[in-house]
Length: 364
Image (cartoon, rainbow, N blue to C red; front, side, top):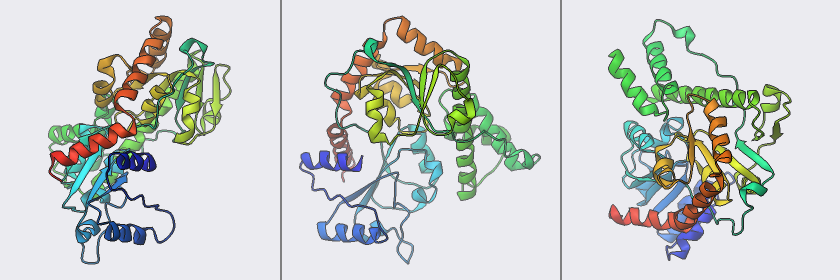
């Protein structure tokens, strides 16, 4: 993603330096690049390096006179320190408004932009849906059995907080962790300082919900007769051999496009707490996407009939959504519309242009 975005920015005439973060001296390379090129902003996916400080406690970016653009592809709860280091010039690109509010609660003062990541290109002549050999594909690794690890804390304020947040998240179509946390505090009357310990607690809750959702989806796929390729380690051992399931090893993001180009339907999971880059890649390769709910996906694709949603609270709705899409004859239209929208607004040059517009808006 970094290379693609850097190339797109350069095409717009933006002076761009791409710094490789490999090796023990990667930080020296970043500092030297900032000094040599007089860089205005460093862009880091995952907000990587946002927590770097000088010996006197200042942000390294403040000390060098440049800003940071953090582009997050996961929930901010997993990276507390990357959001608590004050940076004078900071822009945060998030996958949801909830993520941004969460980051603000951690102390991150920043301008905001909501975007899904881009792709390099769309397939020029994708296989028609009916000619694709794979009915459905989902990329998800086995994250482990969901365990109620907080039972040992019964009778404590922490238990009340965890139970309240978990219960709300499991009942929430959107999985809005920030809203669940706030509602739990309001209902229980708990007074909690939002510190690293609380953030770590919430990140563990987030992992539990991800495990729970994947467990239920995998179980549902095993129990239905929906032919599906599960791309990710651990599922064969968990679900066993099933005539309608094909297990594939995990693939790097760059290699998923070919698989999606042979799939009629691509299932997208964890949409509300991830960046949904796989959904965009699937559309670019001509597949119809069925996803759990995300307000950003709804606004950018759902309103244009370019995606279908299932309800994560009712996993059987996955099979129902896929079956309805295929039997109704709408799959090709949804796939075509998704691919058209990606071509019109979700290639990396589009993202580069949106980024520059954001910087201009905030007067950077």
